[in-house]
Image (cartoon, rainbow, N blue to C red):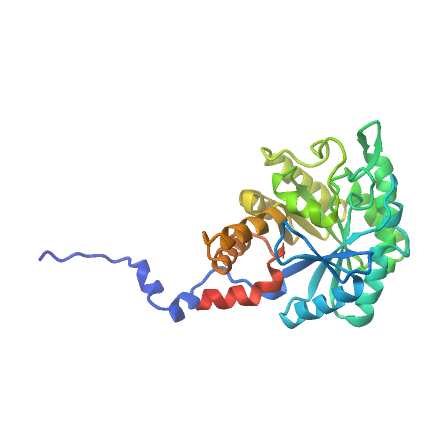
Length: 329
């Protein structure tokens, strides 16, 4: 038998679990995750979200129990979405000091002063028409919307938010919010900017969860074209200059190349939002026996981290320890 001289044998480092773990390049940790939480203004403890199995709208009191469960699973950062009882064409409940987000912030900080509390600073949940800005004859107006975002950000910071997360893709939103926060004594309140948010089909389940489906048209005049990459870099660099502390890319899985491209260009931490459609696809496939949910979710989240995300917002955050254990097993 002729001898085979193979000098390079990568399989040596795959021989068993101990050596595989030793050389693993990308590692997930609960400290890198933010869990989204939906809080409604009604009294019903929890409302099932049909398109997102395992995810609910919570009352404030029930949300406190959910947050305790998250903390028990080593998730100490949460992103709050508020669902108000009343909506109008000026999103007035978004910046009301007695609004759902503001009431929730105060209660959460009272019970969990050490939680990292991020607030979604968008207007679609509070607008009767479901768009992210002021509307005039079906046009979404940029600059008048900035005034409302400023008031909303200040109100959220005043009620306990540690981080403001504007997601409406309005030009100049970071600069406007940074100025308003600084002028009102909230210099230490950080901004996660949804700098790169695509007009994606993967948001469908979220719109049920947040009750924010547009009543007319779409959001393509302010969210990004999925075919554009250079634009993503321009948006990220612009928000960095305007005072953002963290740059967000949304969605995550279909835009891994964008995460990498932005990571290479900015000098800030990069976050990626593992959105509702990505979550629901794995849930649906696993319920049909087509995928192993835990292993598929772990692989997806690892790909997002490997692409360059420092922070991951994911509906799987609550189950992360279970996912990590399933990988170890």
